[in-house]
Length: 283
Length: 322
Image (cartoon, rainbow over all chains, first blue to last red; front, side):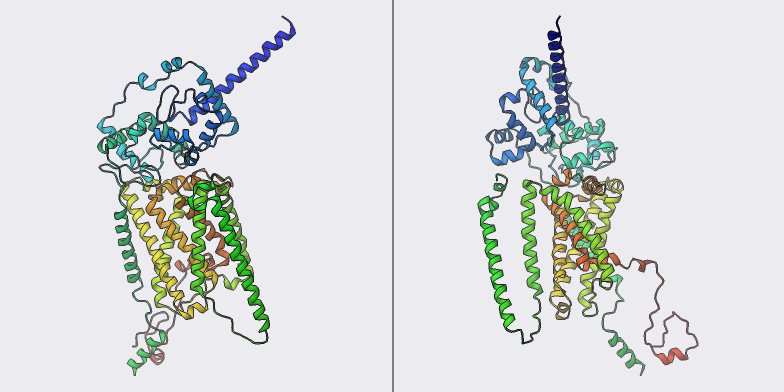
């Protein structure tokens, strides 16, 4: 073996290991950021991403990851079609750094080169996993978790979300209504979002020790399945505004009354008036 | 320019038209002022009393300006124009804090007797009571509510962990917000409707009213339209505020929040920034020591002769001769 061919082999090996390392990075980025809603070979919450780089240009995918809603609003034909196909579900914007994004694109491109049959047999989560069963206790516990008492000390779901159902207070209006979330996302989608929330406000609320346990996620999914069934086909309305206005106004009246009572003995007329009247009486 | 086209009212063409209009107005004002200056120069020998400021007009102008700024911010923040988010959530807080600290120290050292809010209770008392009381108690409760959510977020979240307690907290906070708004409106009505008080008013008072209206109205709207803020403040805004104090601003969460909340946050920073230049400064010298100082002996001129002749007079005990 001469020197030149040795060099070639070393070079090729370096290149190969480098490539595979990059692919692995891309897979890690995919798992961390995308896998809550996307799978390869099947559609989950969002579309199947197998071979997406072939279907769309790399540039288009980069733009979509950075700001999908911007593209939809700007009227990009493909973006609008996808948004419509998935019930206008919003994909959060991902501010991935250059290296991560390149690795992710590389990973997505590499998936397209494999034969679809090979992936379809290995990556079909619905077929591989036994159907999840929810008990009534799960629903009860989920309802409780929805309104507080999460073991990690994170905020109750009801702080920002509404889910119309029996025994649930009118929910928050900061984030999306979750009454029918089960129909939109299913167990996998819910578990994915709760495991690694892609929304900045939510991820900062459940980061670190505040993360949800598997049991909590399961119970919540059971609760959402329940509300979805109970409200099937109906448009969920959060309500509760009138109650808030009534209690707010009542509280205002109470505050004013308290102020009036507390300062009942305040000086109502001038000091001069008091002096004069006193002098008149003492004459 | 694609971002600009997101808003139908603010396309790039109308932006140009708007700027042209603004330039024309500025030109007009300049010419008018130059003309006025000439008039004044010609009448220099005659002494005229300074014309009183029309404070109602100033307030309306400021409110209109605040509305325009709010609208622009809403459009800009929703469309995420350039560096706007970084500017208002990462830079503005430090600028505001710097102005507040330096300005307050300067005012205290150089105009120490003006570190107050120029009481007008002597000029008008009855209307002041029903304006000032609900306003101040409303604001105090809400201020400490925000402070507790910032300092003890876990405690607050634990309290809110039961739905009934969450509702009680939210509804009562909303009531205090309504009290603050009612009090503020009564105070504005009082100041603008009383000639004595108008004499001791200035333009900065109108600015105070403007930012307070913006702050309270946006706060009430947040509580009503983006509700259960007591919980999400503790979980998502507190980390942002802490990151500010750690000198490592993390604006991802607040950047993604609805514009009402963003306006509320921005106007809070603006309030902090204008403290040294306005009557807001009195909150730095709030008479907190009233709570623990000994009572003061106030002697009224009751019947002096009766008191002198009394055999049962003790200092500090009110004489009951009439």
